[in-house]
Image (spheres, helix red, strand yellow):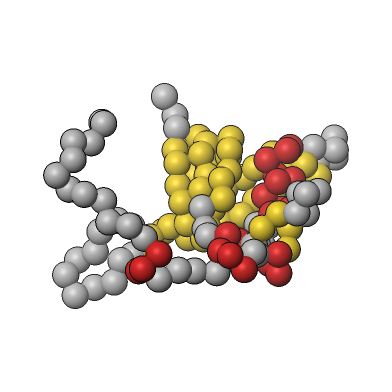
Length: 145
């Protein structure tokens, strides 16, 4: 089974391109922080290359910009090639099957009736909250799972 799921931020705005056959494609890089760090060091970040095709490519280029949080589910693909010095190399990229919004509405903006996207459309009611807006969950109750 070849399945990979990542979540991180886009390093640049994705650009939609088309193949000579008219198929939509976009390539983009996602910065993903590692789950661990050595004591007294910052967490390392991996920069993972992703390619999306057809409708997924159109979706990404329409709704995501540089710095947007994104989750990508897909498969890992390897490519072997010879570099300009004649050395055999191997490259890796994720082929996206699905992409998901993962940031807050405030961060990603919101959508109008016609699914158009704008950073300025974020509703005022979603602008944040305070500790008094939430109710504590009793810890003595049995959880249903």
